Picture 1: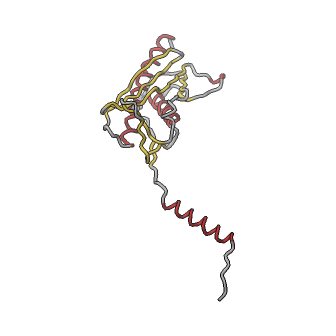
Picture 2: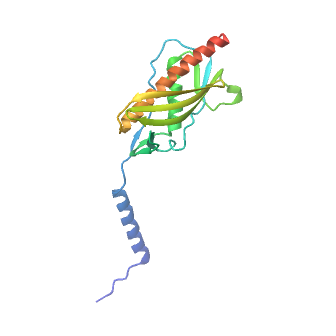
Picture 3: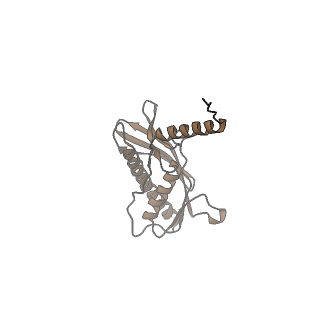
Amino acid sequence: MKAVLYRPSAVLLAALIMMLLAGCASSVPYRYYTLQPMAERQESGLTGSVGVMPVAIPAWLDRSHMAYTDDAFQLHQLSLDRWGEPLAEAMTRVLTQNLQRKNPQADVFHGPWLRSQRPDTDIQAEVQNLMLKGQQLELEVSWRINGERRVNRYKATINEQPSAVELARAISEQLQQFSDDLQQSLKSESLKSGS
């Protein structure tokens, strides 16, 4: 009887293929979501240029998993549900698109920008918190228009254990409410400056 000898490289290759196949069989199918602009298109609005700086968000919210806190200070993550783009970028994009829809004659863009491209009006926003209190999702935002600071809370009704679709829709609605406040403040700024 002849002894069968195995080459170490062949055994190693076979083991590697088995591990790869086992890894593929157990991979989790993540679901991806994004935010959408919800502002209605308007025929007229402001003129001039409006710049939206990148929205700042807390580190615990700056992750691929969808997350929120509750009123007991507990962080909740939707383990299989992820943002399709970084959340801060999505918020900046949606705010910019909402303001573009409200102001079709204005040059609305998001930053950062070069000094030579500085807009007439600049907006800075920082999300302070995203908290679920019972069935109220509350988005707290600190924001500035040309340096004047404000803080507002925007609410949306949602299930106590929201699905990813509900969470994405609620945040999109809250960004719409925020865009309405920004629009009112931009109109006030425009009246002050006489343009």
